[in-house]
Image: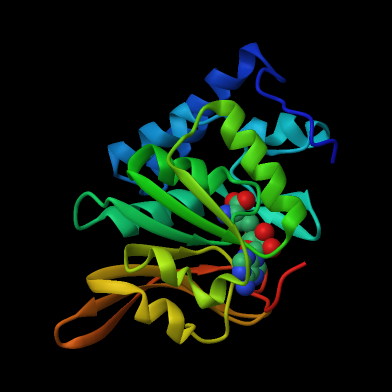
Length: 221
Ligand code: SAH
């Protein structure tokens, strides 16, 4: 990882390959035009090390250093679509900033994005990139995100981009009534992406997809 910003990088072809990626997501069932537009407008290659940037618009997860990965675009789209399915949201918490790509997509669609990452090196790099692209509505915290971000809560939506075995209580506690939480629950063999809704009748859980995320770990480094 060079940490060098790669905003032009692969240049002329990236817009065209991005349009092709959006078409692929549409073909795979992503229907939200808002989400598809956000993906179309976001330079994923800027969130990836230069050596891998030529693969940025393939629908695959890629390594971002520190043993972590940038999520697959289809999953980014699916999770974002699930959070926004009930209408617009003003304030979201993301657990697991990683490269900052998912953060960027959220920040195009939601007024204020609070994002928490436990690996300081990744957080710093994501912050630099997102600042350089021009985002001003993202707030960063270096911490164990399974505790949420209590001072800034409650949140209308929470997205967890690393996999816990069970949903951390702190996240449920920081969700507004009728709030939505998208989280991949499971272990290193089997994970299910689920949508949790905090309704008047209690917690409702809907299965979305089979997924493979890196584990949600405790502490920070
Ligand atoms: N949305 C990111 C996904 C990165 S992978 C992207 O597309 O780039 C998941 C990230 O979650 C990793 O960066 C990992 O360090 C982070 N993570 C894991 N456990 C965490 C925790 N308890 N709190 C905050 N971040 C965590």
